[in-house]
Length: 329
Image (cartoon, rainbow, N blue to C red; front, side, top):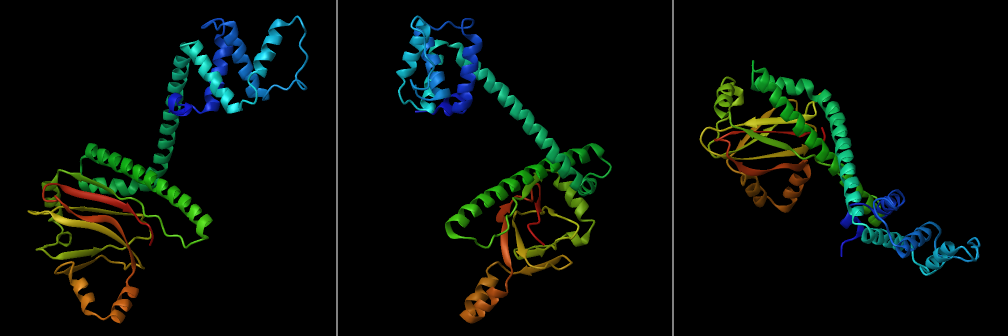
């Protein structure tokens, strides 16, 4: 069975507050409960407000006060009904008495959803304004490189980058909150543990202007790598004044496998390119080494986290691009 919150979209306390307001405002106007229904509603309200009927603390009612006596009797029949049960019964009874109540709740639900949407939009604008102030120069330079002399295309690309940056930031914020919650649970269960950095999710996108991209890239010989089946590892250092790594690539005739990893080590100051025959080269070397040599080699390796898994990309058909916020230095 559905709970009250699942059925109505409000918590029981919120729903009861709406029901009580509806009863006080609409009784005798929008709906006309019977005498017995009204007695029950008033009794349930007293049960919620004061708890079970207690003759020792309740004021005396005159003998000729028929309404007061009837209300007291109805309240007493509720016995030890809990506050939650009384609120639930009040809502259900009111809903049976007047079909307009459900419409009343729905209208409040719509208003609340609109208020929440407006609040979230305001919050997004504030966060984006703060993020955009940090990346304005970076994104402007990148857009100018991609579309020199084309202001409209530059602005369109900047807006896309800003939206992706915002989504990435919110996902990272969620991951941080989730990690903090999990760490708190682990700390309670197992005591404190060494915390590991939270890795932000990468942003990735494609664009179809592959011909223009390759023509532009060919003008810079250092930006072109010839690959004939080898594995190429490009190490890019982090920058003290930067916070993101951006990449963009395309190939002439074939798709390639592409992935991104982050090494937790003091990075060099220059980009380096390493070419190996296959990804199995190092594995074969490790198999040939004895266990002691293997242990020393593994110990000397920096910790590495996978940012983008290696998958084949159809970069011979469109340009593949992306960005990732540094998890460290």
